[in-house]
Image (cartoon, rainbow, N blue to C red; front, side, top):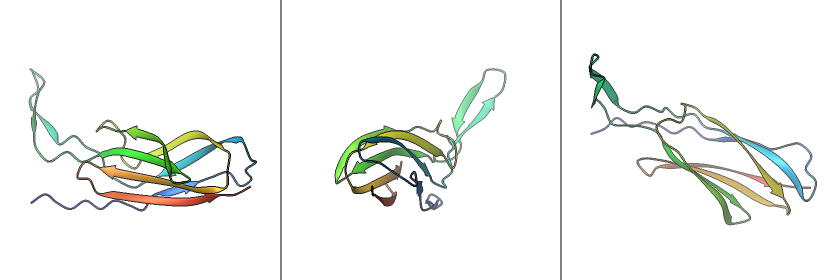
Amino acid sequence: MAKKIKMGKPKMRLPRKIKKGEIIEVRVKIRYPSFTGLKIVDEEKQIFARDKEAVFLRKMDVIYDGQTITEYQMTSATSPDPLIRFKMRADKEAPLKIVFTNIRDESAEVTKNIKF
């Protein structure tokens, strides 16, 4: 059985003051490793073989007021413990939820309320 890898609780940061209709920057960080599970078996020919199970975040969903506004597809090229920033328009007071899902379909989420 594969070793259990724990997903950290994501942390989200919003601007302190938000005005209605303003474009804001959202920052979200999660502690999670990222590796392909491959190793080099022949350095001259650059041949790789599966050594371990790959571990990485597969997607990040951004949900605002109960609706998915964007979905980020991720790969093993995503850095470990990523800090992700994106911009969005804050047009209503509502909860903003970020959900990370790994390749094992395990998920971790964080929610903050956008207030004016």
